[in-house]
Image (tube, rainbow, N blue to C red; front, side, top):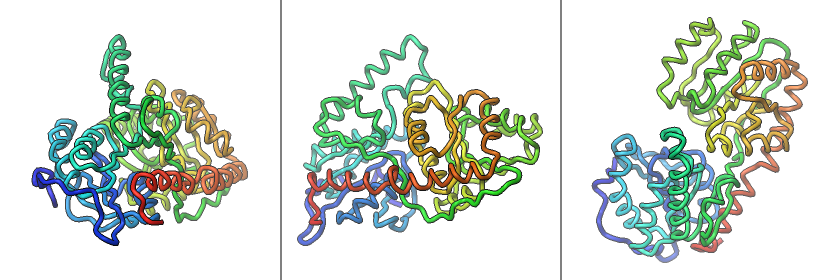
Length: 391
């Protein structure tokens, strides 16, 4: 493992050796080494279009390349304190990489990329995945939230103006970067996945929730909804609890008599997760209201479910998700804070023919209108302007 603290202090010029394509450094302060968006979508698209691509991310060991992207890891302490302490050395590491473009994926990585770019002349792209001005809402009393949002929005605008381009993962994020030299939407749409779609048949239902789970992702209302459904219906969770609420989840499931009806799978490599997803009947996206990032969410699990041929139950308030489900005709929108509404939506989807029709519509939409190919082409077009790769 290569530790950030051991990064060289020198500065490599952002130029490729003769006959070698320019290097793009994907810089992450928190994303995992094989992150779906950063590596398997954006990095893979740039590598396929002719750039050399490397991902520098927290982790250990020397991972094998992923989708044509070289992986380099660094050690850091956990939490925000660890991330902030790692920032100066991360900037030095990026400056010494010889990258023509540094593509950074979180606010602290943006800062490191801007410092490195100023030092070595590399172009800088900020990749925006979330609505950052609202990130502190849950931690602050209501009277302070407008002031915090204004300060964070100003920081976003200043960072955007200092960068060469801003890439946004969903349309609702662009407004916070007014004045940036260039804003490009590279939406978090569906990358092709080799998965056999679900063959829907009559019988008891398996509901599935994939990805991070927590209170704000809806497990309290999900358990209450499950308690209203027939005892033959089951729930499958694929992923991790990310807010420390797993013991409370298990206790509530036991109190409701649901323990034996719940299958819990850990985080799985994406191909395996897709296979387990496609064994279910209905996919769940249950973001809870009250967070701006939930309203603007565009999660991988939505497109995974569509590609697996599953109808999706999702929140009507989530602008991006709801718009896709309406356009694709692939699911049911509900009040995700209401267990009765969720249970009613499950009953609405108990008919196998209806599930099959919605699943087929979602699969078709994920391969066409909401497929990754157009987004990859837009990202490559940006990079042809920033650092031409020869094709």
